[in-house]
Every structure is written in structure tokens, then in C-alpha cells.
Image (tube, rainbow, N blue to C red; front, side, top):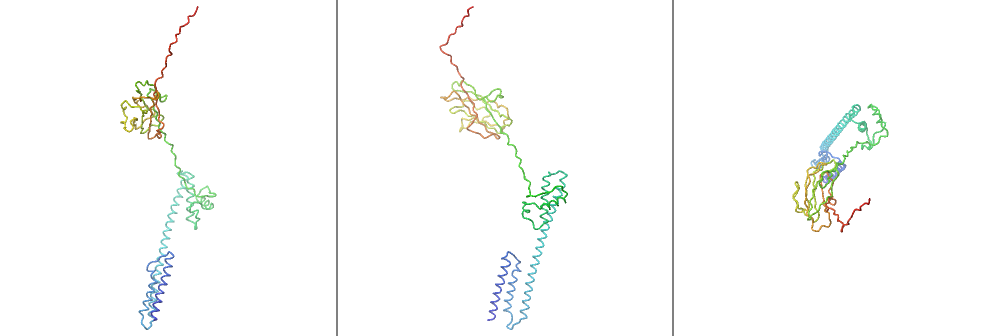
Length: 351
């Protein structure tokens, strides 16, 4: 009966010791090697085994020796684990020191460059001083502990007294006062001027285009037939690139002449348009005239005919289909003689 009580007590001890150990080392976010983790469990198992293998006659000497050996083994494992942790910590600190040394070397190189740039004129004085302030801020962070979080974030500079003392040590003849947040250089995007737009003007053909486009001509419209010659020119100083031109007849009219040279074949879906494409139209150069013959509708609402002209190009303004350039053809004006005629006889002067 005593052996059963001893077994139950040992098992309970194993559960309590293991629970405390696991909660302490894992519940707090720590971790140990597996061998060190199971050391208390091993000790408990040794106690259980000893409770069964010892002879009926109590042998306190054997039990004590076994427990002492188990305790020494567990202590050795825990000591080795502590040594390993200390070595790892030292290695991490050594790596951190190496990184800090590398940053200090880079900071020194940048400082020497900024000091030498003063006489060489490699950078502007404003940028040079900003660079020196950045170097001193990094130097302050590396040489002080703890550091104001605002200085680490770049929202605050080190104390003016410390900055001015370091500037004197560097041989600078300027000082800082009420140093504000670290000013980072801003990249200013250069705004390029908007490219000029090309402009195209249509005209009835005329010998001289210097007086502007000719937009009105007269035609007798005999037998409802109108014959016109149209041209175009890029005005200003910007050539029109990938120029596309449309000549549109009036509603109810009909094209009678063949397509002028260079014009695209007529599209069955838009039979009222005549179009042509130019890879580039140089400014102030008149295009060769295009001859058109137009059949007027049977019932013309007025004695004038309007021809709509459109254009589009790569560097032109967007096409406004509601506002074409209009060319007008009208019938000549006629004057009627008064009937019956008024006879006029010159008066003979008396001598």
C-alpha cells in the first residue's frame, strides 16, 4: 500500500513540475533546447523507477546516489544551455557592433566628402549644409543612449549646443539656432511647356494665300452643277503630323467628279465624304488643289452651297464634328434693267 501511495505521489509531482516548467518557459515566450526542456521529466521518471527497483529492505544509499547523479546530469544540461544562450547573445552583440562600426565609417566618409566639397564647389552650399546636419544627426544617434524618438523619426534635430560644438570641431564657421525638423531635399519636377498645336485652314484655290483663306466664290450653278477647286495649308510654325482631311458635300448633293489623286477610295458607309491622309504637312505650304464637281439637289433651298471641311492630326486639337470649316459657293448676283427704258436727250446749250 505504501508503494502505491509513493507511485501516486511521484506521478503527481511529475505533473506539477512539468506544468510549472512549461508555463514558465513557453507561456512567457521563451524557448530552450529539447534536452533542457525534458530534464525535470527525466528526473521524475528516475524517481518512479527507483520506487520500484529498490529492494524491499530499504537501501537509502543506492537511492541517494542515483538521485544525486540525476541531479548532477540535469544541472549539467541546464548549465550547457545557459552557456549556449550567453554565447549566442555575445554573437548577436558582436554583429550589432559590426553594423554600428560600418554605419560610423559611412558617416565619416560622407562627412569628409561634404567638408571637401566646400572648396571644390561640387554641390551648392545649401545642400552641403543640409548634408552636414544629417551627418551630425546620425553621429548623435550613434553616440547617445537613450535617444529621443522624435530625433530618430527625423522630426527633431539634436540640441543646438551639441550641434554648434561639433560644427566648430569640423572647422565650420556657421551655426544652427532653434534647429527644427530635418529638412529632406525635395525633388522638383520640371514642368515642360505644352507642345504647340498644329492648325490647318481650308480655302478655295487662289494664287496667293498671304491674305488668308478664300471661303466664298461665285458659280452660275448651270444645270445644277458646281465646279470648285479646294486646297489646305498648315498655318503657324508647327507642322501637322499624321494629318487626316475630310471634305463633306452638302445634304442631297452628289459627287460627280472622280477622286482627286491621293484620296482614299470612297467608303460605302460614308459616300458623302472624300478623305486623304498626309504623313506630315509642313507649315505655310499650300497643298496642290483638288478639283471637285458637285451635282446639286433638284430643289435647292437657297442660292448658296456649303462644303464642310474637317481635319485631325497627331498634334492637333480634338475634332469638333459640330464646327467644321465651311466653304461657300453662291450664284452670281444679277441686276435687272428698268423697263421700259427712260429716254434721255441731252439739252442743247444756247449760245
